[in-house]
Amino acid sequence: MSHNHHHHGHTHDTGNIKVAFFINLVFTIIEIIGGVMTNSIAILSDAVHDLGDSLSLGLAWYFQNYSKKKESKNYSYGYSRFSLLGAIINSIVLVVGSFFIIIKAIPRLIHPEQPETQGMIILAIMGVVFNGAAVLRLKKGTSINERVVSLHLLEDVLGWVAVLIGSIIMHFYDIPIIDPILSLGIALFILFNVYKNLKETIQIVMQGTPENTNHEDVTKCILAFSEVQEIHDLHIWSMDGAFNILTAHLVIKGDPSLSDIISLKAKVKEALHSLSIEHATIEFEGIDESCSVHHKH
Image 1 (spheres, rainbow, N blue to C red):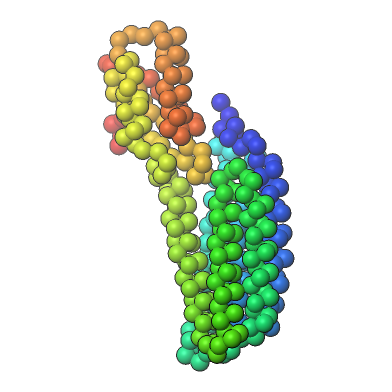
Image 2 (tube, rainbow, N blue to C red; image 1 turned 90 degrees about the horizontal axis):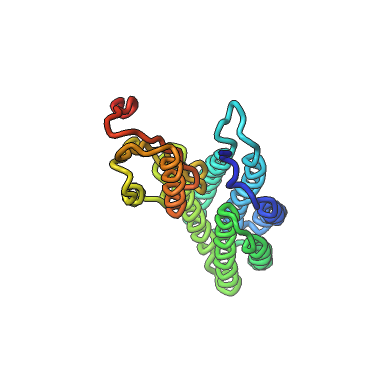
């Protein structure tokens, strides 16, 4: 059975990601220039945030296309794990960008400089509009990738709302320290999210049990079949955070015929599907049969 049947319906998903990528990229360039011109570290830190999102959109778009390639001799499971590579590259870029912002912002806390607030207000309004447009574009999407990206962009919109409020306050009152405080808030928020995403990505790369499945539930589900005596060598992992795989050895009672085994396998796979296991490889053994692999652990 092909491992690639989970990639259907992704064509418009890459289309949506592509549009969001270009919206974001254009705006990131405007922001970097605007941040320098308005002397606002908060705008620059949001530019880093948006650059990270542009990167993650670009990588998601590229790897989403790449991950649709059929399995090959070198990659027998296909290419869907390449999307994780995108997540790791993006995390590194965001960490570097955030530290750059923190290093820039700390001296500003000690010696605040008043930014050009009118320009900041215009940029912040544009930020809400641009990112809002990208969110709406991805809201229509169905894939996990699109949902994750649209959540990212929604965070951007909220970041820009914070910058907008901050720049309006600074416009009317002389409180320039708001600018570096905002930028530190944004940088720490980015780092917190990077930590969360990296933790999840590393768990997938290390073949940890997926978060949306439970070892005990899976065991219970399989043992619920009266023909199954016991389970061993049960392994559950995820290809890319969305497509979960299981391998198991089931010891079966009595002396079932081949057609009984085929029927049982189909029923077990169907039951596992309801527990978010998309691909199961099951090996059956008789009660007296010793499992060669079982004792190697």
